[in-house]
Image (cartoon, rainbow, N blue to C red; front, side, top):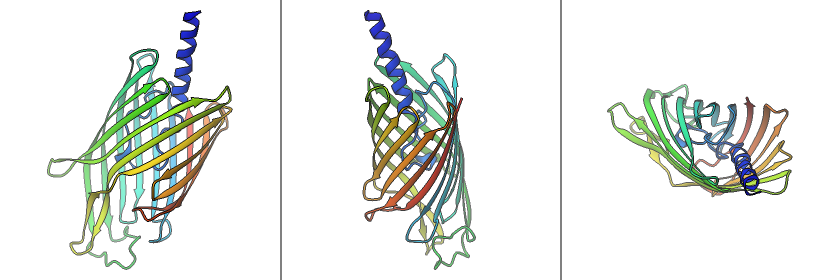
Length: 295
């Protein structure tokens, strides 16, 4: 009987682990600077996840557009996996292209404790050109014509204890002078709860601190600087293992809702809508469409 109960508890933990990763990024994450390389660690199946996001603020319509592709490939029976991310972000000041490859290893410490460690390396290109600066219509952008390329690195770790999880990561950029700079950090903690056979809840808190491009009109250059910690609270509910309903709040910036629907064992389609609030930096309204294929 004890063996049966232990086996059942382990299976429940594994199922909960997979469900907790179903919505595999924070609600508002759009760039590799805020991507934890262990985020896919506890999945047992591979998946392809695509996101298309349109944002607009008081500056102009559609001041930011984002396209992201995330492919996760697990190595069977090795507790090991690879992730490849491709991103294109139009910030209104320029266009950013990024590619990143990560590897993660997870370890089973006990029936209730699992650890994961990840490392990533990538390449990004930021193009600032007068034809790309669209969110400052009053700006004389004739002097802007820059392309910055850099190598990126990321480190991350995550621990899951029973129904609780905690993760943290840091992202670095190797600039043209060979100096490493921190481009973003994040930490997340949460809990998932089984409410019977057909209902599942996941609570999560995410804190992020990251660099963002800032315009220096006098010197005609684009600088990057850290902004205050960005905080996010989210609640997701899985119904009948088919429909994800969720809401998330970025403190003093945005309120968002998300709906994701499984149409088969393999395909999931989602929609997200964000409403700006407060007076925080980078607050925006947004639409987002997502598509996932699990194999």
